[in-house]
Image 1 (cartoon, each protein chain N blue to C red):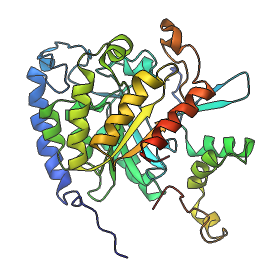
Image 2 (spheres, each protein chain N blue to C red):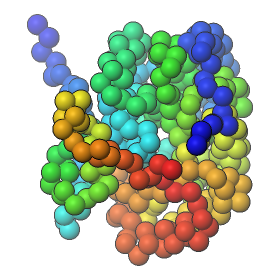
Image 3 (spheres, rainbow over the protein chains, first blue to last red):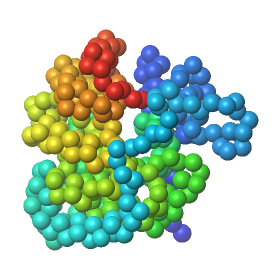
Length: 72
Length: 287
C-alpha cells in the first residue's frame, strides 16, 4: 500500500491582503470561477472565468458572450 | 477583410523536427551552453552549472490555467523544475530554484493529458519553468509528441543562448518572454545575473522575427523608474508593435523580504505611474 500523501492534481495559490485584495497565481478555470463569484464586477477575472464554460452551457449564452476586448 | 500573419505556420513536420533537435540538444548537455551563463559543464556526466540542473528534467505542474494572456487561455501549462536565474521574488521559488523538485517527466502521459486538455477547449499548450531553456532536450521531446497543429507557447526568461535559439527556431507559435529588469545592477542584485539587458534584448529581437512575441514585465515596488521605464522605452524604440503585458500583481514571495523595497505589493501610485509611462510611449498593451 502506498502511504505517501498524494499531490493535488490542480493547484492555484492565493494571497489575500488585509485590505481584501486577492492576488492569484497559477489560476485554474475552477478557481477563476470561484473568484468571479466572489466579485462579479471584476471584469479581469470574469474574462478568465468564462473560458471555463462548458459546451452545453455555451449554447445557452447570448451571442458575443465570449468576445475578447483585447483582440483586434 | 482577410487577415494574414507575417509568420509562416509552424512546420507540419514539427514533431519530427523536434525529435531530431531533442537528440542534438541532449548532446549539447555535454558542454552546456543552453543559457547565457554558458557554464560549459558536462551535465551528462553529472556536472552541474549555475542552474544545478542535471541531465533529466522534472515537472512540478501540468494543468489547465487561465492566468496568462487572454489570447492564450485556457492553456495547458507544463512547468519544468529549475531555472538559470535566481530572482528573489520568484513566485515558484521552491521549484524554480530546485531542478530536483517535482516529478520525473513522463512524456507519454503528458502528451495524453495535453491532448485531453485541447479536446476540452484549451487554446494553447505552454511550456515554461522555472526556465524551460535549461531543459531544452526535454522540452523538445515534449514538442515531439504534441499534435502538429497545437498552438504552442514558449514561456521564457529570455536568457537563452544563440545555440538554444537555433534549436527552437520555427517550433513555437508564440514566445512569451519576461523582461524583468531595466538595468544590470538590479538584475545582478535581485536575480544574480550579469549582462542581463544585452542578453534579453538579443533574445527578444530574435524572437520577434521567429514567432509571435508577447513581452511581459512584472512591475516591482520601487522599480518603476529604474526598471520599467527603461524597459518600456527600449520596447517602444526597438519593438514598437510588440504586444506588452504590464503586470502589477507583484506579491512579496520567496526571498523578497531580503530586499527592503520588495516587502510589499506595488503601491497604487506607482502602478498608475507605470501605466502612464506605457500610455505615453504608446505601447501595444495586452491583458
